[in-house]
Length: 374
Image 1 (cartoon, rainbow, N blue to C red):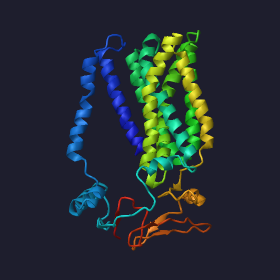
Image 2 (image 1 turned 90 degrees about the vertical axis):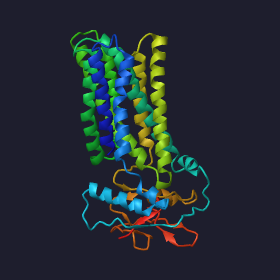
Image 3 (image 1 turned 60 degrees about the vertical axis):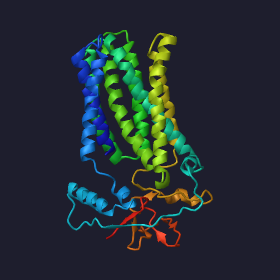
């Protein structure tokens, strides 16, 4: 799904490049007002489609006393996914869960506790660098390509670069399914540093034959490799945190990336003003990727094929770190709602339970407050 969403992002980029190409292929005299108006058309269409066809959350409906509406949504989802008739959509709402000792905003504190301190810093830095590279190049290329020769107009080069992101997404999806997360992130950073270096060397190459080959290869490589980084890095950020802090942790990492996206144009313009050249900007991006590649080794968790934590354990319980296990160590709720670990031949995973007011046990895997009946 992450790869599919990134492909839709590429579709928007192709649409934008097509508008620019139809307005002025050389990017010299663009009519920015009309481009903004035309660029807003897909947003308006998708807003209308969302209002018409998107379904509300069944968990939200159930927790707000709208059980019939929630069941209707589940039936529609069941039909859309072509589920077998034996799949039940019946459910009951679990009573309120009391998490003892938890205060408002404790998720933020847990992102920087001893278990996740390095994970949060390194993952946030990776998202920050990824967005600086991608959006910095997205800002720089329309200014650089019109001055380069070979390969067609600048507008055509923008379109071809956007098309190169599609195979990049495909490679990212395949690597995400076949390899652990950390080696893929290191591979992406190595390839990105290489492509950036090749691009800027090709731009400034005195040889008229080798120069265009190098900068075209580097340009297309940057566009494709960035997609691998987006798929794997954001997937890791969504997997590494337990359920209690997953939304907060993922939002913090993505927010760090947005900060990088905002700073990228300012850094590019700063290098232009100070050094009167954009070469230093690309060398800085290379340095970012190299440093980031070394930092990946310090990530304590590998999330590929792992059963992820559902909740944080107190800081005085170091075994909480070991609640990551292999995919065969799946947790399955019994009919009473208690979590029962499925034991492997060699080891088993202990699953924490959550206390309720009535001292019963509930399934911590179902953090939305609803339990489906078998």
